[in-house]
Image (cartoon, rainbow, N blue to C red):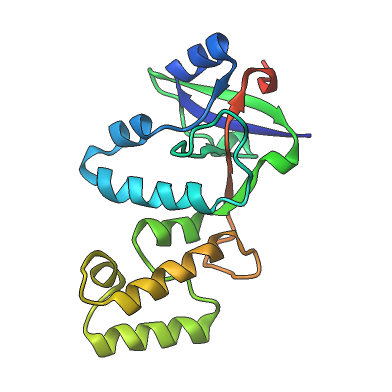
Length: 181
């Protein structure tokens, strides 16, 4: 068993007390960053589809993962509408996510295998006269977009290093019985 912390809207705690379960929903992602709604949801949908954790019974297919931290000081201040929940869970329920690599995905970037692969990708973009965002968001560079998408599963590969080794975690759900009050 491990201890993890998660910052959630106060309504999540109410939901846990009422239904006993919570999983991530588009509603919370969409209201958090309305100007980036489409891009953010696209990244979160990818994260949910590719997360190596199995989907638990009763969770809808469009449910999004719940972010957790193993360090309570890494949990952002809850604010007026938020709560910080401490959970005790089986370690197998948490999937590590490299923060720097997740940032690359949120910017529609390419996660290189290593420095040589990064340089190869940068040269290719330079030859096309584009960047990752343009390749990903326009229909004109399908091969480059596919290369970008095919690099994203490296998010979960700890042998592929990034500038930072800082990790958060994701879980498929939170259950009331895991609350450590």
